[in-house]
Image (tube, rainbow over all chains, first blue to last red; front, side, top):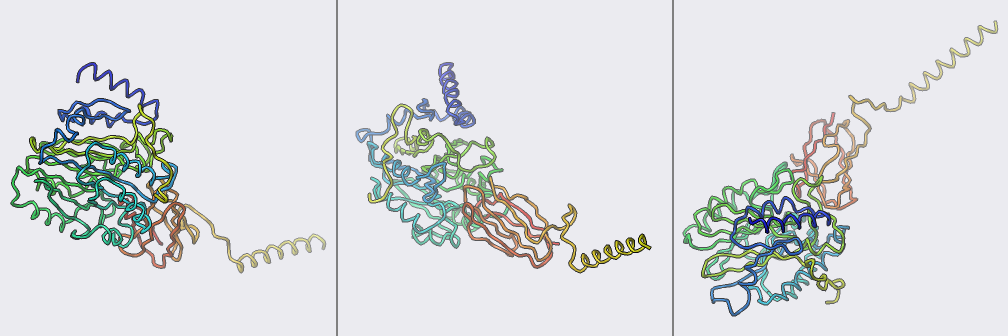
Length: 340
Length: 119
């Protein structure tokens, strides 16, 4: 890292400390991510300069595509950390709709609802109907499993899935696998995939060429971030062993309501921001619960993730952007979702 | 004579009081090494069951109250009891009719564990 970059980061660390939003641990991770993308600080969130290069229809080749990951909408949550999670979800959708390119689809990495209530799922569906991308893929979070082991979730979003809701699909040569690690959780444990799902995963990947880019998505992180708060998956090592032979593996998760990234060999791990409320960095608060920030800063710690696949490099560029950054006024969060 | 009758009166009074107390039953005495009252409370806050281990007598009712801003559950690992999902301020009660040790956890956040000891 050059001295100039280091100064910039230190300066932003100070600004962030004044804001009361602690990103120190997160920034340390970013420093050794080593992705080769040039990171700049904008509104306290690193954004990649590659974003400007890869978007725009003129640059696209026919095999290229993009999708957006959103996560942890928690429809039904109404406490001080965010009294209107439906409005911030709407802002996220507005942001997707304002993108210069229409994503091929959206992936929601779970905690769609707060309490698995039908009305909460209904509201979510209503908001998603207004998205430019009509195809949405889901995996459940632990909050979506609260009624009879996820019966409500499976009825609505589980068509064509197996077990507690796992499945795979292909898009322009990229193989996507939706995993469920929030079912049958054991006392004292973290996330769990289970024997049946792991066996299915092994057979699902068997025979695929190692040059097939793989995207795994699941709610709870598939790598161990902070065991004390359950931020990890007890049996993910087996799953990761199955993808080890592939040339490009991207793991997309949610659950922790903040961005964390790690690269291990050919596997890139990434967690997304929530569209509902942020959570504290590991160990910086008594618990992992909703973190209150000043109201005018809420939209800077919520966000979406744009993923661009370039067929030429068979690589995926993962770019996070907050709902609002410090240089612009908060984009129209508007009133409630009622009647729209 | 007078002193004698006073003494008899006070002694009789003591005996009567003692008998009344015996009949009425002594009020429950809370000692640290004895099971406490027949109703006990566990508060759920900050992803923690407090107290994490609670000791109650046979027949006691334990009431869990969720004071967190996130929903939790209280579910026995041996299938003995199972709360519904408790949102903020919601409660769940269970009456323990058999002595034993009852470990439990939150099925939503399984790192949260607790224990009820019934003796």
